[in-house]
Image (cartoon, rainbow over all chains, first blue to last red; front, side, top):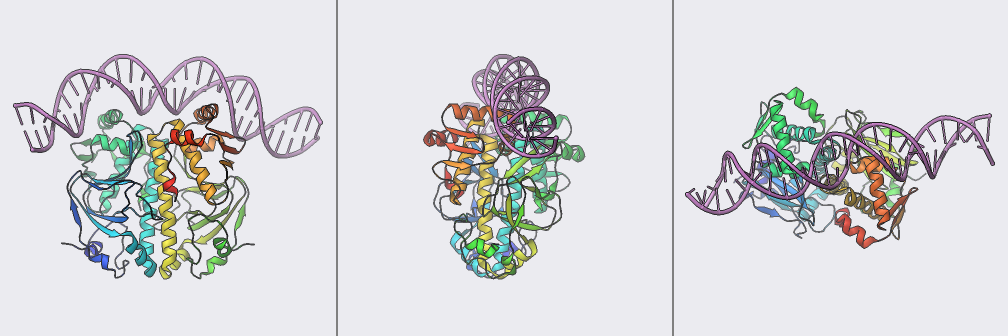
Length: 234
Length: 234
DNA sequence: CGATATGTTGAATACGGTCAAAAAGTGTGG
DNA sequence: CCACACTTTTTGACCGTATTCAACATATCG
């Protein structure tokens, strides 16, 4: 069973981690816990303060509204850190698995202690948060200022880029287990409208999303309709 | 002229900073630079890598689309840190002043060095980023899943809370120099529709936004229409 | 095979956008 | 203090994108 330490040193774990930045803490010895597909790893408003690092699989980080609507905040992938808060307090979002999911869980308190004693770890965490920030800002642009077409196109290109940086995409193709319902909750639109939009993207030979598989067909045109620039994912 | 060090130790600078967390770095001796209203402090795609800490005044952090639309990502206020990136590279967003604005600017490189040698600073920066994360996630919920009414209500409540934590709001009243056009670019809607929405909020005696001044009238009903819970701002 | 989740399509509706113009506010110089 | 220009706010009429509701088709799974 691979420990967190071994995972951090293993081949492509995003631009997030550089080796040796994690000091020598006991939590590096933890092994990943495996969750079945569609299980809830932690729930919004819960009071446990663990932090998760995704080892493999797909997950959803989402916040619910009182009226039952939800917005998916992010789809944490291999190497992403989830759940760091600036203060003690209940969780702001829920985390659920889509596929089988392996995550390392470490105590928030211990992580903060480790940051305090090892500057490089602080930098690592700060950089990971800064990247998530950039992603959230781009999602905000999506929801606020792009129409259904370019929004959808943009997110599919983002996924490709993120997956490819952890070795899970190549040649414009990748596996994507998201349902259209989940995609809609990411993009802030209805399932029905997303479905029609995906249809249009397919008909225009830009990108095909079907059966858990995405294929970029005409990258140039797709990038143009999306207004996509991958700089924010670096 | 107050140095960054003195500022950090001065009375309410959010929950962002705790005293003594900044170690002993030369950049703590910088003094704030003053910008006139409506000046551009830095521009998206620029290659300077400075980091800004707002001392006083209102600013806008925004990203532009190719078609000329823009989405305002955040309104950094007293004590907020702007511009930290996970990697070297061009700026992802522009920063502009609305009012006269005083900001400390420090070199990204020096800050990272300081983080590496002083764990407490890493923690401080990480916490600041985590809070910004929470704010961005909430803005994403706004744009994605709340209608014009509750979205507007929600943001006005957020501003009140954020301002109050740095001593700039009390008794449900605060100064807010944002134009309706800027507010619309924050909320991802058009000026015209925002104007009508503000009218409705006023007519319903929930909150009044006029002449650079906001007044919460019926907090209970406002919180309810917004679905507002301030936990994410802690 | 039946049950449930997911995807697809159609028709009616609504929320917010677009376009245009007027009213009110702000600032500047004569 | 007024005239002028400019920005910001407000209002009206019309339009379009995305939502809603509903039905049906197609996978997926025990």
